[in-house]
Amino acid sequence: MRADLSELSDVDLVQLALGGRDAGARALIQRYERPVFSLVLRMVGDHEVAEELAQDTFVRALNRLDTYRTELKFSSWLFRIANNAAIDHLRRRAPETVSLDGDRGAESLEAAAEGAIQVAADGPSPLEALEASELGATIAEAIAQLRPAYRACVQLRFIEDQSYEAIAEALDLPIGTVKTHLHRAKLELQALLRPLHPGGSSPIAAPET
Amino acid sequence: MHPNHPLSDVALEALLRTLPREAPTMGFADRVMAQVRLPAAVPVPRRIPWRTLVGLAALDLAVAAGLLVWFADDLLHGIGDLLRGGAKLAVGIGSIDPGATLRAFAYDGIQGVGAALPGNTSLATPLLIGAAGALLTIASLGRLARSASASSR
Image (cartoon, rainbow over all chains, first blue to last red; front, top):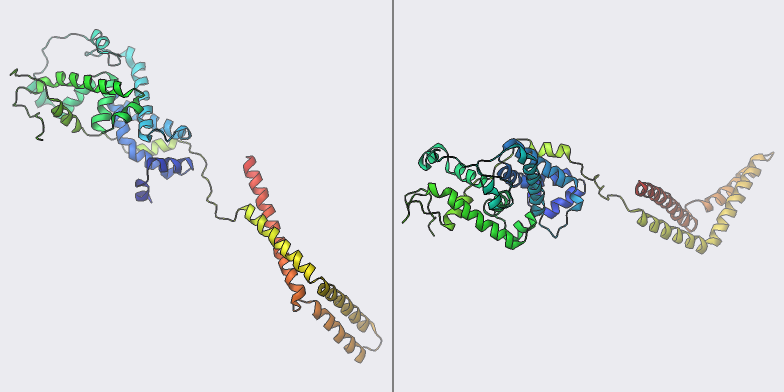
C-alpha cells in the first residue's frame, strides 16, 4: 500500500488526505520531511528549533490542506509555509542575539554590514579551518552567514534543485529577484570561501566538464 | 594570479550541490500526525444509492400495478374462489352429517382455495412483484431518511 502511495503525485496524495486518509498525509510528510527540515535548518541553524518549525510547517499545512490550490506546486506551497515560519522565528529571535557577521535578518547587504561586529583576524587560518571541520560544514557555515532570503534561495536552488519559477512561488518573490538573490549569494559565498581556495592547489576545484 | 582568487561559479555550484539534506529525528511523522486533524473519512459508496433504490421501487410497483390490471379478471375470480371455497368448507364442517357431504364440500373448497394459491401464476406474479416493490420502497425510504439525516449534520 505504502509503495503504491509513493508513486502517487502530490495532488493525488493531497486528495487522499482531504478525504480523511491518514496514509495520504503520512506519504506527504515522508516525501517532504527532509527538504522542509533542511530548508528550515539552513535558515535558523539550530536542529531543535528547526525540528519544531518543520513540525509546525506540516501541522499548519495539513490542517489547512483545503486552502491549497493546485495552480501552485505543492512543494512550493509547503516551502512557502516553512520559509515564513523560519522568517517569523528569526524576527522574534533577532533582538536576543547579535551575529558577528551582522544582522542575519537584515533585508539588505548594507543593513547587514551595519550590524556587523569587526573582530581582529586572529581566528583559525583557512588551512586550520579545513583541518578542523569537514568541507561541508564549512560551506554550511558560509551559507549561514548569508541573509535569510539568500539562504532560502541557495537551499532551494542548489540542494533542492528547484527551478527559478518554483523558488519564486515558494518565496513569493518575482523571478528576477530570485535570480538577483542567487547571483549576490554566490558572490558573497565566493568571498567567504576564498580562503579555502588558495591558488589552484585547493581540493575545491571546478568539476571536469 | 592572486593566491586567493575566488571560486568559479561552476565550482561553487558544484560544492553547494554536495551538501546533504538533513533529516529530522525519528518519529517526526508520528509527532506531526498527532497534531493534525484531517477531515472525516468519506465512506466508500458500497451500497446502492437511494436514488437508484427509489427508481427500482417505482419501476417495480408500476410493473406490479400493470400486471394486476392485466390479470384483474383472474384475480377477482381467484379471490371469489377463495371465499367460496372457504364458505363451503365452513358449511361442510358445520353440517350434521359430515360424511359424504363434507368430503364433497371439502373437495370444492380445496379446489377454490387452490385456484387462489401461487400455483395460479396469473395471481401470484403480480403479488410477488408487488411484494418486492414494497420491500424496495421501504429500503429506499430508509436510505433516504439516513441520507437526509447525514446531510443535515
